[in-house]
Length: 126
Image 1: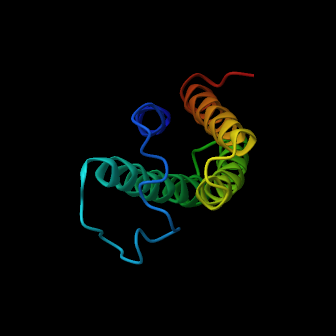
Image 2: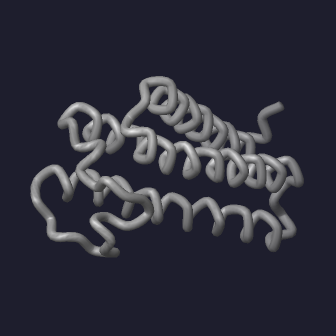
C-alpha cells in the first residue's frame, strides 16, 4: 500500500480522482493513466481494509491465537480507520502537505504494527 501511495505521489496522480470515495461520481471511472493509478490505490486500500477486518475476526474466533494478537489486530483496525479518514482528507484538502505527511506516517505505523503482530504470533515476541 505504501509503495502504491508512493507511485501515486511520484506520478502526480493524487488528484486524478477529485472526489471521494467515488471518482468523478462513479464507482469505476473512465481509466486514463493518472486515474488508473489513483483508482488502483483506492482499490488496493479496499483489499487491505478487508484483510485487516478479516484479521480481527479470525483473531477473535481462533482459540489458539494469543490475546495480544487480538488486541494488536483491533488497534490495527483503529489505525486503519484513521488512515482511511486521512486518505479522504488528502483528496478534500487537495494534497495539503501536512495531511499527506500524516497519511504516510499512519501508513508506516500501521505497516509496522502488522509486522509486529505477525512476528509476535509466530515467535511469541515480548
